[in-house]
Length: 370
Image 1: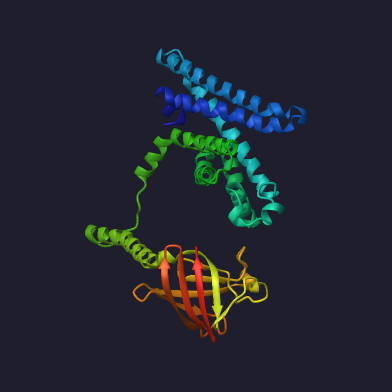
Image 2: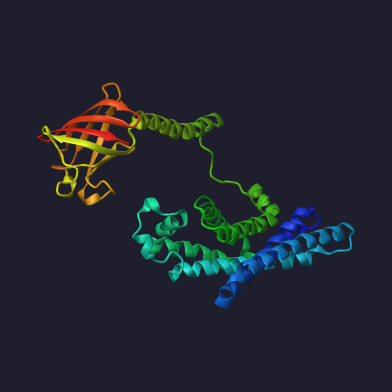
């Protein structure tokens, strides 16, 4: 059964979705090409014109799909040519945009180096900036993403390879849509990515009968091992063991969850002498911030404003909830033979606590506050 036969004589929504994705997507692609070429003097009209064009395209697709459906119900309308034309239009505008996005990555137009983002702290970056910095970090990753987009787009241009192109592109586009949604990339980018993803799904569903038949006919020719009961037990264990392992690990890690966070050292005494407020500028052991992380990681940082790896100390810790103390493992002097440093915790409240410890030959008391 062909894709046209699947859609033919179906409900109105099937016709609307195909015409909507083909017409609105093609209009969006045309705007993508034309609007950046317009003179700067009329840039203020770009968005109104773009939204007007998209609005008219949406209205036309709704009206035409209603007309199409009524004519087909009367038996006076041959849907096959329209399905073919809309499907071709859909495939071509998606291929055009995906090829453009792919080539942008290869030529470093997309995810290119950003000077201000590179000089910004990651904690203050917006979602789009963080995404740009992450994907722009590795040119190799960008090329791989571009490869999938370009190969998939080229396959869309040929009817026989359309399904293979969809199979390659759909996971990529679903990932892009999720990034655009949860990292607030931008309404136009999000709209375009959703259109492409829905277009791929529409083309995929056109061939659902052939796909279902393929899986119904496919049989693994390798012999089964064991009986049904043993295979069922193996499957259940394969699911339960990782789940139970993660539950146990999560429980063990979160026993010390109340300590997780960024702790400011409000007062530090070393060998009975108060460490001066600005001593951290000359003494890297005059800690101003202590970061307690999951997985037993602890960082002692002298800089009160930002974490600096070169001047900070990394230690591992084990928390004893009953004794209310940490056993801190220091690799500072001898990484092969680390030192275990007991840290006694007192006066713990949700946002403050006191530490007493002996760091090598120094007796240290600290007051910490979140």
